[in-house]
Image (cartoon, helix red, strand yellow):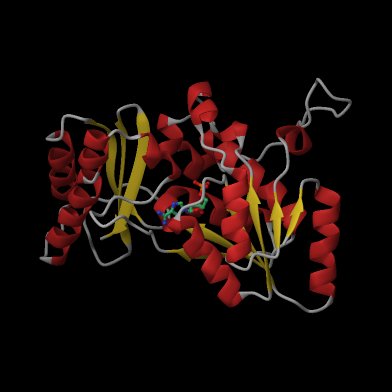
Length: 286
Ligand code: AMP
C-alpha cells in the first residue's frame, strides 16, 4: 500500500491504473476509522480493481475550532487497518497542500464549491459553511484521485445528497455509491465522535436510533402524517435529558424539502443532536 501526501504522484498513479483499463474506487475519510468506514472500504475492494482511501481532517468543514482540535488522528492505526483491508493507496495530504497557507510560498486557495440549496438547510443551517467545506474538499480529492466510483455512507445522508448534486452540476465523471449505515448493537450509528461520549451520554445517545425506529414503525403501520412522525421522534429524544435535540425533519429523500404527507415517494427522517457537546446525526428511510 502506498502512502502519498501530494497531488502529483497520486494523479499519476491513478492515471496509470486507468490507462491499464482498471476501475479505480475511492473512499474519502477524515480518519479515526471504524467499522462504518471499513464497510465502505470493503465495498470498494469488491467492486473496483484498485482503490484509494484518503485521510484528511478538513478544517474547512469545521465551524468550531475545539471540534477540529479534538478530532482523533490515529494515523498509524488507520494505515494498518487500510493495509489489512487491501487498500492500494492512502492519500493523506497536509492542510497546506490542500489549501495553501500564507506561511509557505504557496498561495492560499481562492476557489470553493457551494451547493446552494441542499447545502444551506438542516445541517447547513446548524453549521453554516459546513457543506461548502465538504463540497470543496471532495471536488479537490476527486480531481486528485480521479476515481470512477466513490463510496459515501448514508449515515451522513445530507452530505451524500450534496455530493450527488455537485457531481451532477459540475459533470464529474465519478459514480457515487451510497452505503448503508453501520450501527452499534443498541442502534447508535458508528461515528468517530462517539469516543468522546461518557458512559451515560453513550447510553443516552441510542435514543436517536430508537426514536427514528419508532417513526419507521409508525409509517409502516400506516401513519401518513409527517408532522405526527416528527412529533413522535422529537418527544422520544426530548425525554432524554442528556440529549440536546437540534432538529427532527421528515423530508423528500432527494430534495430534502419537508413533506406533509407520506404519499409513496421516497421519504427520509433525519435527526441531529448535541450529546454532552458532541454533535451526532442519524437518519432512516421511512
Ligand atoms: P468521515 O470520516 O466522518 O468523514 O466519514 C467518511 C465516510 O464514512 C463518509 O462517507 C461517512 O458517511 C461514512 N461513514 C461514517 N460513519 C458511518 C457509518 N456508521 N456507517 C456507514 N458509513 C459511515
